[in-house]
Length: 263
Image 1 (cartoon, rainbow, N blue to C red):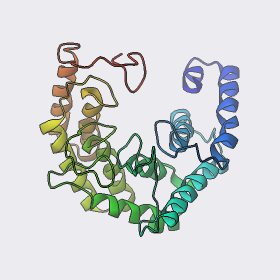
Image 2 (image 1 turned 90 degrees about the vertical axis):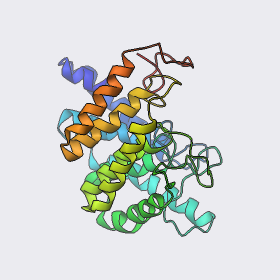
Image 3 (image 1 turned 45 degrees about the horizontal axis):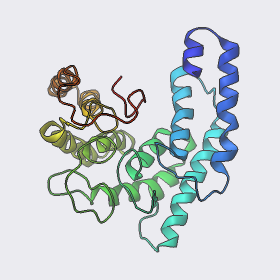
Image 4 (image 1 turned 60 degrees about the vertical axis):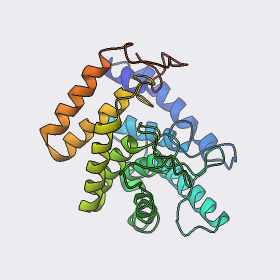
């Protein structure tokens, strides 16, 4: 609503909504065992909203110190979990009793948004917290180049944004830009091939676990490489999405939602 209000020139409404967004910070940063850190329902989703507002409006509407408070809480939460289970990985996160890896509920989404945070994340935190966690994550790949949905899960089954290779394309594309390491680009490209081979899903057309979300994989890779192969692949997936509801075996429980809906 903030970005819409700005686009319509309604500055009073925009300011009101910005104040509402910022007022949530106390709830997000207060110690609360019921508050997850993941993208879809947690602190990282809130952080993404703050960053989205600044990126969309082209200015620091949300002050860096506000963003920093959220980043700090996310990092401390991951460190606390790591210490609790005596892990060698510096940042460990849990959702519903599992160490998820994917973009929606897991560490891939968390690291992606942390890397988006720019100057709110220090160089030391990038080097000693984020990158070692990223290195551990990349070593969890299946031989197929897909990723498990969670630690200890050996089923190479899910290829969707929320769980599996599609969500890792965005992470490793950004990691390549941030760290200048070509290995990360190679992983992103490998994940893209997994999506091309296995990503036309029959459970729906949604962003979260459908063909539309998987199509973003190729748009990301096209932006990363400039290779028109990826743009062609995105077009093929878009063409599939235009067949709605022909290939849909499961109807979404929330058909009008942003992530799970078809509209």
